[in-house]
Image (tube, rainbow, N blue to C red):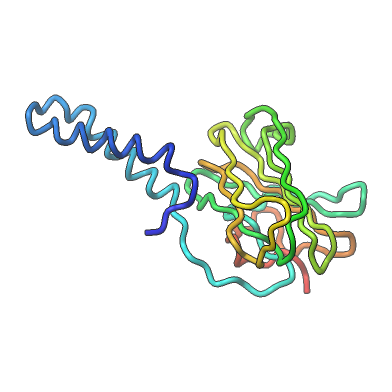
Length: 203
């Protein structure tokens, strides 16, 4: 199973501690009180940080995240924001919605409210801009109450293919995608999305 880049600081110490306590259990069974939950936690982290290969879907704009469409909102400048909520069981690796060039990757400090909270727009986040065939596309990775770390894989100036892995949000949260003026969403609130596969725009 492929694991996401950027998970080592969390996974390795947990897995190492689980292995040590499992070995100590052979000497004293009381160590099982620590070994069992640590082994379970390691298994859970392996699942949380999985990074499956994907065959890109068809469409001008593909979903950047696994999750559920939380809201679709018209923006004052004519764009449409599609907010995708990621729960802890989703794949946490985000993908490029279109092919193009990364023009900026900006980290913005903020809080850590639950991602479904209406005020989570002020959370810790990373704002991406892509220059694409549809013009400038903005995407925002938003940390949640559990996800305290966003790990971008690319820097400004990088060329990116559609559905390419671009970053990781540890343990869920939210990804907002802004569709350019004149492009309507092909998804509805409550729809499930698959990063790099689900079409977001109407053809």
